[in-house]
Image (tube, helix red, strand yellow):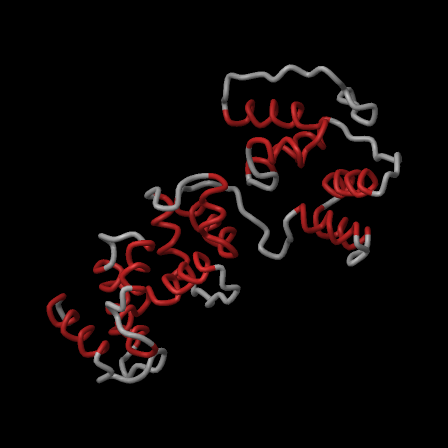
Length: 254
């Protein structure tokens, strides 16, 4: 089995194009695995942001040369650059690359909460599912489900039906979504919500469906203190918000 010195020499040769084009290296699967693992080690002393700056500074060349020199880190770094520059294009990430981001997220590289969600962009749910797995947390994002705000907007613009929303998110979240759409339409009809609905909204809030701070207050509206108190209870936060108004459609006794 090749040692690290031999793998390091092989990585240099890969960067020179000796072993083929990106994604088409003339190496066996075990050697490719060892190259990937070594590349992860090599780049572990720098954040994705720092590596991206090195790319911008032309330290890895351009085109195929850049892809070969960055190896398994290439798509990750290119996505970061595109996000920072506001480019919509994203390169797909495989499970190993998602695991790289998950480990870096656990180490705190991408911050917490909405900061992490913004930096991980469209890969946030996949990365967080891996984080949950690595940390032994049973929570999981449904990768096939849109964000609640997207369902609200699509239902409001008639791009999706009530039945489709209900099938996607379940009865309790559907009621919240339909109530928000009715509110947007100036319609006073509301589904009655109960404690079970508040519990579900709290779990969704912990998964950042309703952002943080003032944005969370705006998205949850008059339900905010009820949901936030449940969130605090679940997270063991010793804070109870005052509730001045109980919405007429909220009945916590059933």
